[in-house]
Image (cartoon, rainbow, N blue to C red; front, side, top):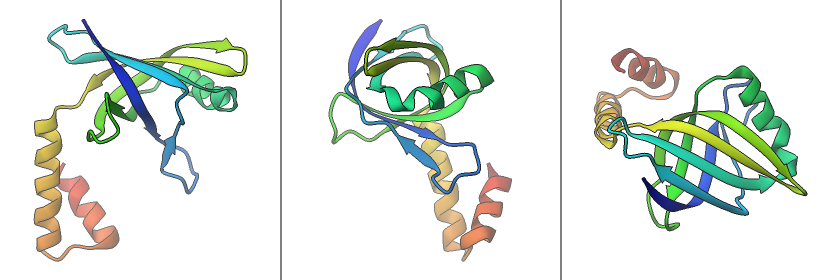
Length: 137
């Protein structure tokens, strides 16, 4: 296993709020590549206690969410994982959140970007672009 410093943590919301991505300012964090051949990663983030209920909801729902993480340094591109909250530990004014996930291949992501670029070149915009993209993916 290899351990890296977690720099940034964002989660794609699946509720009815206007905010589509929730960013969690990290007090500290790490991310571990399990090196299991399946691209599994463990994420631990130490965040403010005010985010406790958001993570408790995800834990109760036992649902995978899209998680964007920046590893090692701020200038790195975020990596995308599908992850579930596995544990929450309250530590005074902070909350330690443990997530278990699988990194989505950069090749798959690059392929999606090419599909999107192609649809945009075809003239799709707005809601029609979104629908065409969903059909292709």
